[in-house]
Amino acid sequence: MKEISINSEFIKLDSFLKWCGAATLGSEAKIYILEGNVKVNDEIETRRGKKLYKGDTVEFEGEIYKII
Image (cartoon, rainbow, N blue to C red; front, side):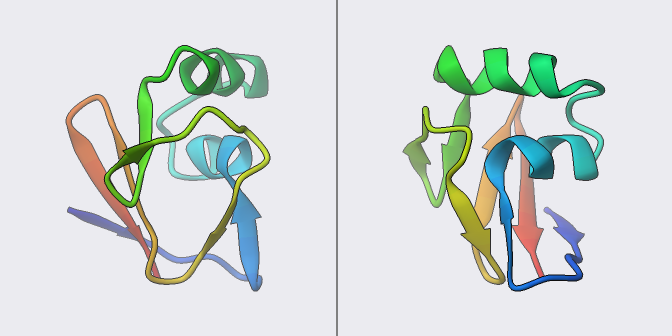
């Protein structure tokens, strides 16, 4: 599990995928999310604007990221 620190109260899912390096472009992150390839707290999430807070986990391509 990789721990990723954010500097704000929350971060949107598409921005988080770019922030942690899982996606290189926002459009790439959007496609991953819309295709159902991303899980937030063990549930598939298809809203790219989903707000993530400290303590949330994101799973993508076999990697788990925890927001701290």
